[in-house]
Length: 494
Image 1 (cartoon, rainbow, N blue to C red):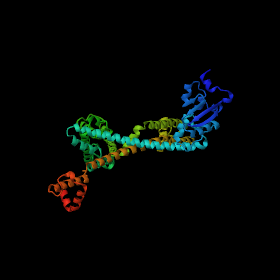
Image 2: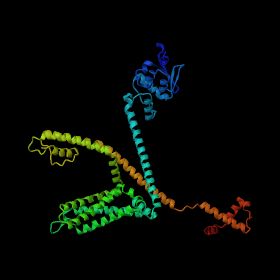
Image 3: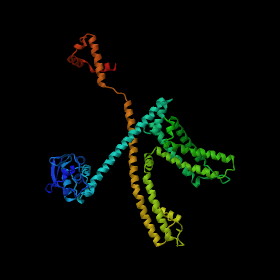
Image 4: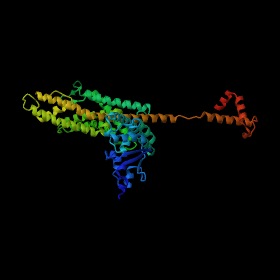
């Protein structure tokens, strides 16, 4: 006789399964359990060995033929009700995730939850998931702040082995942390002002009122703007050289994106000087004016220097760097929509002589500005069917753009909170360091030392016995009462 048959193949009058769940005993028909063969109790009836049975339950009593489970007995009543009715109800007293773990243990899917409990169950589950996400985000922000602080401390330790390390450390801290001191804040504000001045000067230079030409109709620089440009470049160059000179590690200096932006922002000016010099020496070089214009336009990269002083811009860069999947998904959706609607509009508008949508590349342009809801109006369909397709293209564009944007915005919010946490952590550390630098005096210890010296002086002149061990607390108390507070204060000062 097979071992499994000894357990399960009983007579017809004994086709009852005895269950003991945390002390709650219940007998249930095998036919009821076999209604759901994929659950734990349903699989238990198919076991043919003791090892297989003990894999599904905690213990088995061969004599009483009773299966024991060390689980929550209160929730097991809901499990029994599921086997009888086929509907699972949620236990309100139990945590949502504990309930989810319990039904997962019994092999019951969440899809069996009855409609009267499913909505509330999902709402509670989503609420707890959001709270856990916020807590994990806060922990990540705290960990990031701690990690950034530890990296900052390691960078400071490198100055100990360098020549003029203390001097370099003071300058580097003031350059990297504007909240360190008043001088650091003044430098940060000055650097930001120079960046904004350079951007404004570049915009003014593009205005026709400030453009000047020589006798050969060649554009020349405005003297005032040229001086302003030289001053800004001198500031940027000096700042970059100082940052490079006091950096704790020159190799790591070039891995910082902010330093690369500083380098790129000053290169166009010096490249323009080189090109203009060669243009004057060699007149045979063609299109040199266009090269100069392109180099001057590259000065727009200076606006990226604002990221050094803006938490929002740094958060935007981190968001784009970590959201390339969502950005790629957005571009994919737009590309598919543009390809579909451009071909559809071309097939509708190609026979119209008045319509400008007479080629697929032009229809691509129309579909792009329509799906992104820009709508320049330079090209548009003129037929009724083309206008209907245009309306549908705009509606699809709104939906396609809105779907990934929510994910990107949530990531931006998280990274912004993280950057703010790092900034606040650095400020708090500086405040703690400043408080630690303050002198510490224990008034009680000072008072005890002065009293000890005072009593010793009294004992030396014979007022109190010379043996210090014979001096009791009452005598000390009497001497304290006799002493004049003014004289005691003078003795402390001495």
